[in-house]
Length: 585
Image 1 (tube, rainbow, N blue to C red):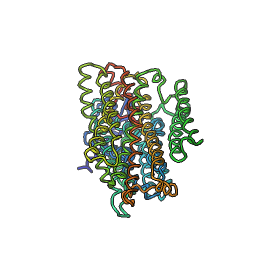
Image 2 (image 1 turned 90 degrees about the horizontal axis):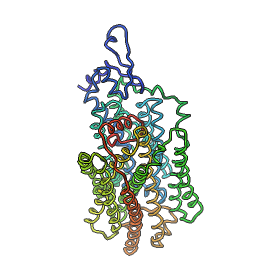
Image 3 (image 1 turned 180 degrees about the vertical axis):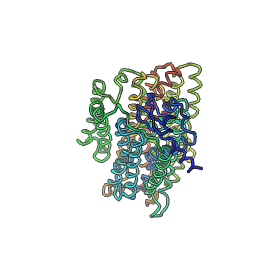
Image 4 (image 1 turned 90 degrees about the vertical axis):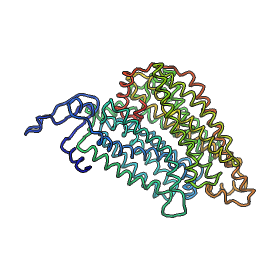
């Protein structure tokens, strides 16, 4: 049945060039082919204007299945190392700074290349960018699995992040092109489930591949298995979109890219973020007062401020719409988003370390113990979305979104404050309840901020604004991981027992998976307590940041919500090549 289904598609070729769609007309059934140009906004709209039936549900299902598989890989790869990192660090002899960079390298390059992918897809076509991104991601995954040193692994993770950024950007744009506007929300919601699943599956899969004494089936397979999944996803997408050509947008040229893309703004943003990340890494190794640390910590924020000033005055297509800096609500939402992802990513990586290093759990068991945090953060968005919809029907504005943001920040601030109670003597019941509270609070903040952000912006700037929103979101996650690593490493260096500290200084690495084997018992207790206190300090840092986000969120304005405006904004957003979650728009 499937073979005949694919053969049927061959008889109805479709070409999409972004500004003009050429479809075979009825006359083309004869000896002469006649093409009819149509000026509509998406591939699905063009088919409807031609009087042709839209893509069948089965065909859309195959496309979305392949797209979801690639999106799952790209998003899961950011968290899959959270539970396997202690094992990887022990295997490759990673220092504390290198420990952090295994996660940060992927997110930094994923963030850096996303704005550029949108413009490139206009030039070379949506499918070509997606296929190229999948190839880069698969190559990076192969190199990750084959890495023989921690430096090689970090570089391979950076390469995989380049591909991951393209996948995240391309999947939403490509799928929105083939779905009718009235059905787009339904299909986008199906893809959004992938994000929730990745938050849950990442730590579990990382733990699964890192558990056991087998020298063959180990943490490397967490990266190797990306390859066959990429191949299957490529086959599904290729067959599903056979004879459907997403050509370049006719109005887009390489000259326009060179003249109008904001290369300087992107360079300033990424350089500033990179300096902050490197500075916190140097703080772990060299101390906060060393010249190298101070140079990067001071230079990074200055470059970011310079980038903000540049964005307000540049004549190019700015990464951030200039009006965003003059809208108080937009600025508040961007700060809240940054701090939210700062805390979320810190929790994802260092709760996993807590369960393995302090509890002595296996990586798989640690992934299971992470479920209250990851599952809570994923499922909390469901009742939050229902409540937002209910309030919106009553008020006709974003009041529901505002109070979900406020309540979510209240719960997450309290939750991260309670996480500071976790130590080497905490009961198993509290180890379940406290991460659950923090996870529920964090989960309520994944969708509502963007909805307020979209309402605060003018429709003409929503596409570039959406790209800026997700740029800030991913940057918050990257910086959060770097700061958490610095806080943890600095605290541990001060309070670790002297004998263990001398060994650490000589080897530059600690085997986090064997702390429970330390003898004598008195030394083991001291070491486990030191690790627990060092992780506790991360929650102590995150809590006031979330508190600041809570205070400023009270000043968020309410905006009217009209169905027509929302539909217009969704069409603008999903037809742009930004890394947006189409369902949130």
